[in-house]
Amino acid sequence: KAGVTQTPRYLIKTRGQQVTLSCSPISGHRSVSWYQQTPGQGLQFLFEYFSETQRNKGNFPGRFSGRQFSNSRSEMNVSTLELGDSALYLCASSLPPQGDGGVNTEAFFGQGTRLTVV
Amino acid sequence: AQSVAQPEDQVNVAEGNPLTVKCTYSVSGNPYLFWYVQYPNRGLQFLLKYITGDNLVKGSYGFEAEFNKSQTSFHLKKPSALVSDSALYFCAVRDRFNAGNNRKLIWGLGTSLAVNP
Image 1 (cartoon, rainbow over the protein chains, first blue to last red):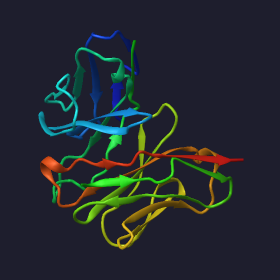
Image 2: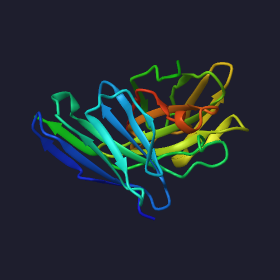
Image 3: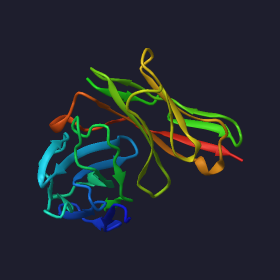
Image 4: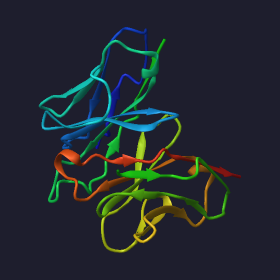
């Protein structure tokens, strides 16, 4: 069973540009979450999608957006890049909600996209 | 507010010795608790979780964790550390009564484990 696939693995962008990152979840998983990981801040939750709808959103500016397609693949977009956006962006997929809302399900992570803004 | 604390940024242990990585949490209700491990340049891998039942949970790679409700802790343990266990470990919690639109995980900042040969 293939794992979570994130593309590209590495990306270098210039300040002010925009970037799109892609995530393909594990087959059968319909929930996709995105995280930003930096050494000082740890994992910061960006947003979660389920059935093409955003279900949860973290405390990030509107420059950060995402979407999910009917095949559960997800993309996140960052516009007007800033130096502080340099980070490892992780995507995680999980099974669809069961019973009490799926809160006991673990997430499966991709290897991440390392974004460097110069 | 819900939070997770991993009080140690780094833990050093000799190979063959027992290891403990600490985690304490604060949630309004009863928690679901998770441990993940991150190897260099990799994504996070699920290790184990506490949902209900036995307070001692066994997971991957010989790791286990003990849920202590009175101390609001969920420390990760392994009886005999390996050099290959050296990695970054994350504790995460989710309030079991937060479903649907509030089911996001709350993460600790991580603990770097170094196992010395």
